[in-house]
Structure formats: structure tokens, C-alpha cells
Length: 322
Picture 1: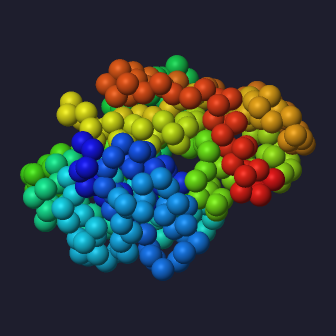
Picture 2: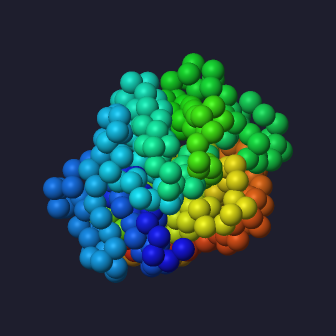
């Protein structure tokens, strides 16, 4: 594996940069795509990584531009497709679903043009698995066999969730119909926490930041499934390296209520004074999940809640958000 060339799309992002870091540590030559290679602030954390000077190449690419990934993927044996639009506010189908699907197809078409590519690891999401959890029995256990209901997401305007679901299904259909030289493995992480390499805030860590800085006034009765960025990055790399890896992998460490998250923040960082108050009423039913495929098939040992929060809070201090 060491010395082989791989590509990471969206390498400057929260997850993408950790995948780049891990690949460099394992001796790979890495080509990563960013929207603007001349934006020094956006790529500074990448070029500062150990091994980057010798084995990291930055390539400019646009999800919506057919062929723009050709140069980045040329000569690569593996491709990690993490790039995808993510907006919390002002979500629309045009902003999220269309570019996610078109971008995935553009990357796969570029991969198909390169005979060297043997596997593509796609970053999907738990959003493609369990959005309809409130329509199922409380004791339902989610596995990789579950898929979010597209009609329901369309009706509710859950465009990010729909974008991840349709993009993953589109990728599967592309491989089934075109029979390229590569195979496809999909990773489905839930809300990602943990230490941040980029100096900019990401949407996942922002939820912890708003608890820490007082922007969140009332704790939600709904809980969250969580996973550490270090585990997600490792799962991507192992999903490429292990020949037997196949299909999709659900990446979840734990389910936690806002109160459990706050209690964990207080344990790992007593300097943070969370002021949010509890909501009246009963907490929402907990989400049950089975990550046996990732744990046994890939060998992933997930970080526990406190370790995730410790890494997140430390980064919020390091990057001067707190």
C-alpha cells in the first residue's frame, strides 16, 4: 500500500483533511481536490501535515464540472469521494441534491476513465439510513440494510438527507450499469465530532460550540447519534485497504441526549460553563443501531463520548473559538 497514489476529493474539509492526514501517515502519495488551490488559508492545514511537502498534491476541481476531476484521479489506485455540499440554512433541492448527485457522477466518470482505479470509497451518511426512524417501532435496530424514505424526505424538505440518499443510490446504480474496473464501498457516518484540523468551524462541531458559548438556550429532547472523525477517517482507509470490504458501513459510536452531551462536556472541560436549561417533557425514544459490520469487518473500535467531546472542546480552544 505504501507509495501508492490515491485521491481524496474535498480534502480541505473536516473529514477530508483527516483522511489525507491518515493516508500520508501510512505512506501513500495523495492527490486532493479543493475548489481553489490559490486560497492559502483554506489549504494551510493540509500543506502543514507531516509528509505533505513530499507526497501531497493539491488539485483544483468543481463538483459540477464534467472532467474537472480527471487530473486529480489520473494514476490513482483508489479514490475517496468526500466532497459534497452541506448547508443548514436556506436548504433547497437545487443547492444540495442536484450538485451532490451530479458531483458524484462526475467523480465516478473520471474514475471510470482511469484503468488504474480499483476502488472508490464514497462518503455517504446515516442520513441515508434512518431519517424515517420516527415511523418505525421504538425498538427497531438500524443496520446497513435500512434506507431513508425518499418520499418522506421530499415531503418534509430534508434536502441534505435526500442528497446523501440519492447520491449513494446513484453511485450504486452507476457501478451496476457500467461495470467499471473499480468497486464501490460506502461509509455512512452520523454526526461527526472530534478534533478539527481546519481552523474554520464545521457544522458538526458548531453544535457543541453553541452549547459551550451559550447560543443554545434550551436543551433538545431529541438525542443524537455521534461518531469521532478519527474513526470515520480510519474506516475510509480500511475500507479501501481491506480486499473483503464491500457494500456500505454504518459508522456510529453512541447515541446521546443533549443532557448527556452537556454532562460529558463538563467532565472533560470544567472551564466550559453550559447555561442551557433542560426542556420539559420526556426525551425522544433512543435510536438503536448495530455497527457489527464496521467493528468486525473493518476492525474499528469507536471512541467513546467523552473522548469525542474532549477532542472537540480542545480544538475549539486551539482555534480560538472559545
